[in-house]
Amino acid sequence: QVQLVESGGGLVQAGDSLRLSCAASGRSFSTVAMGWFRQPPGREREFVAAIRWTGVNTYYADSVKGRFTISRGNAKNTVYLQMTSLRPEDTAVYYCAARAGAGSISVTIFEYDYWGQGTQVTVSS
Image 1 (cartoon, rainbow, N blue to C red):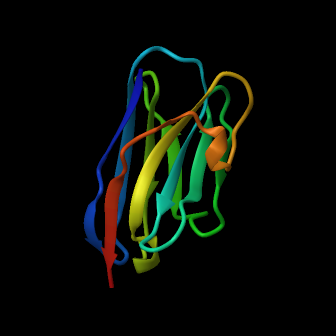
Image 2 (image 1 turned 180 degrees about the vertical axis):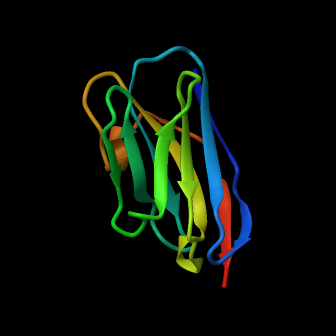
């Protein structure tokens, strides 16, 4: 069984920064890509950012481009989301996801195989 554990969420003010971390443990799997999604209150889960595990390909939602940065850690299957210039509309539960097997970077929820439990990010105005 694979487990993804997010950390780093919290309550911040608009304009502040936060760094989310995600670490995978459990059964070893071949990682194609890892991504971050978020679910704002009362809304559906949406794509935030993704990184291809081989190479340097990254992809961002337009709403976070230029403010958020996704990166891999030195440890296997670890990914970070550096969030700067946070806005109240960034308030959401943030989820880490991993895509295994074959394929490439993806913005689609159903193409990810493993999910974390989520970490709350609240940005006050």
